[in-house]
Image 1 (spheres, rainbow, N blue to C red):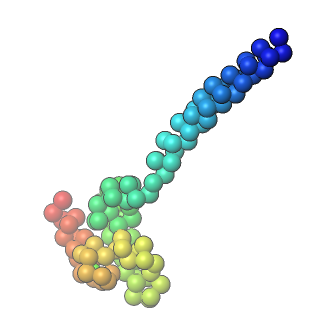
Image 2: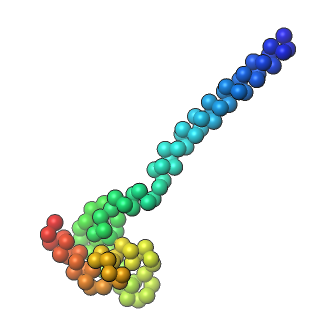
Image 3: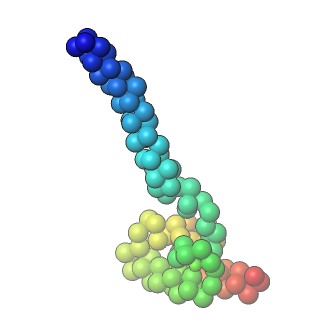
Length: 106
Ligand SMILES: [Ca+2]
Ligand SMILES: [Ca+2]
């Protein structure tokens, strides 16, 4: 009788534990895919300077801030990457002009 109980105990360990672990993995995996920042960043238009999902006057305001930081030498790499909408490696008035032109045509 004791052996029988031990067998049941073993079966529980062998069958239930992997199912439990698999269930844990299933609940964790969607979170890990959602948390990938690279996929989200690719969705944004380069004109969406503040990365809020739409291109409007707020992006001009953000771009002017980044341009001021850039001129002061305090802009971060991320800010420069977002602010350099004409992709010439610097954040200048020409980027602001390009964004104005984009807004005028869209
Ligand atoms: Ca925006
Ligand atoms: Ca530029």
